[in-house]
Image 1: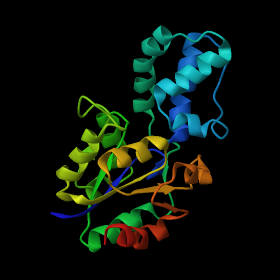
Image 2 (image 1 turned 90 degrees about the horizontal axis):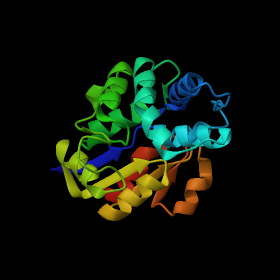
Image 3 (image 1 turned 180 degrees about the horizontal axis):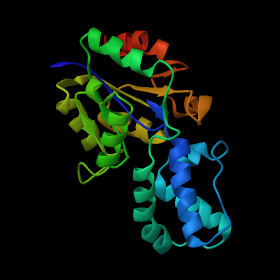
Length: 221
């Protein structure tokens, strides 16, 4: 069992907001409403998931209902699945950071609230799926983050030691997941939330992936 680093995907390893917003806007067009999410101003909303984007757009239009969100969510997933790597980019230094951890004999995996099939496809198209020993999505298990079960599945799946693991993420969901697991949380400041993540009191923050390796060494050895 090796020391282990688990990564969130959206907003942590990659900026996926542009393609997520495009999928949501395709749904709004299909609904026949004028509201559109903005790729820059609404990037933070996008990284909170498809239902959050639909809720926001419908609320702005003054016609939000949970039933309509649920009805359109499969259409959003379909639209996103057809074009999930048009605008998406890995954050600067992400690949090098993961490779550095692997060379230092850390186990690495992914735990995301993106549906498993979409996450697998995206990581493969970005050319990095082979870097991770595990990949747990929103629907891999009956529960999703911040429930601790997906995190432990990601740790176990890549051969990591639960007691010597940590989670790298960008949101309160990741912070709560790490807290439930009683492991350190490293939050990134280069996602849309920026330095506001400091308010979540993580064990560490990083402004660039160059800072990850020494931060991991300090937190779990």
